[in-house]
Length: 183
Image (cartoon, rainbow, N blue to C red; front, side, top):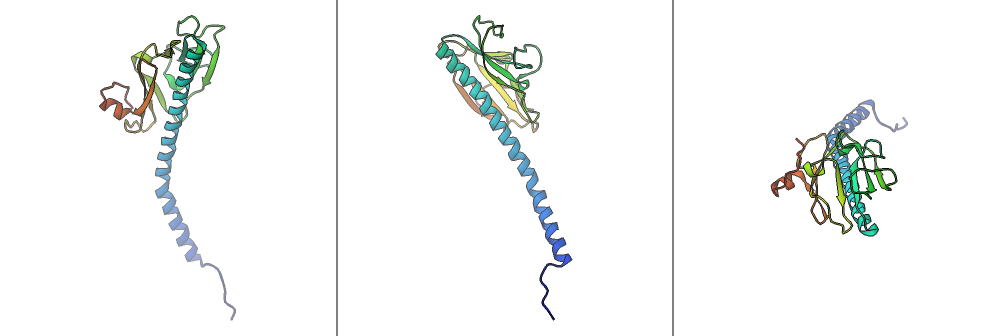
């Protein structure tokens, strides 16, 4: 009698069941990894915009600002928070609003993943840098995702000299800062 090679139906069912259990256990941690990476990426995008504004203010010897923007062309001072997007522009007249003829240096569209980016009272609508590279105001931006966890959320702090520091919101609170919280 010839020897048959292959799997029985029972062996196949058991293998598929084990694979389904392993995938079911891995999916939640994979989702957390995606959310963590999205927070890190969006934090780096915002920090890059701040650094661009600062370096362009120094290079151009004029005021450069970031403002939240719904349409990627003008500042939105009343509606929503920074998660709707922002623009970096040369603010020739220092009014913290982009006027006709003021050059847009960078545009960033809305944040993905239902993440929120909000500033404390100093950064409710704009962040500006003077020709020396110092910030015209100081404060903290808070980046949160739908988990609403302060140990995961990012605090982007800008001091008077224009230096940017990033920590978790939990760390910023323990340092005595008063960022918006994720909860």
